[in-house]
Length: 167
Image (cartoon, one colour):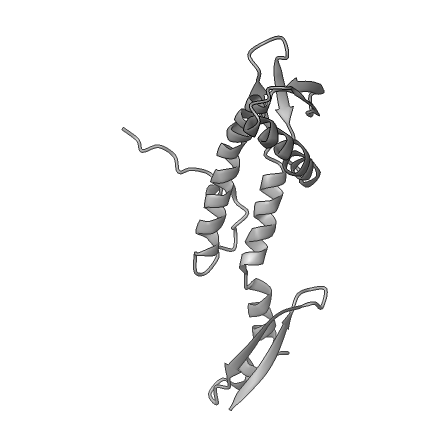
């Protein structure tokens, strides 16, 4: 005999469905209201939990870019609002100008302040920021493919390169 279970998060939203066979020797496991079952559900982690941590880290990985001239060093913001503007507004302009061999600067505002960048400089900024962002994505993919997902998945040890070997 099987029971059908609807898993809900703390707010009551449905987060999963399962059919769990009833164990005649241990019927309380099939009882969705048993403390053991609820405790188990409270500790089950999913890719969406890790996704939220990934998004938090991506939004907080601002980086610096050194123009190497009087414009100096600027901090490039990477929160959701910043990324939306960079990718939907600045990127298409830079791509169009590059395709047309047009080096006309693009006026942007970084976390440091206003600055003009050439299309080629913009692509270099994107490339510079990509290194840190790609690492976060790589750690995310590794974590969601871990079974089970570690309870301390938000710990920096899962989001950083391993220390170099001792010599």
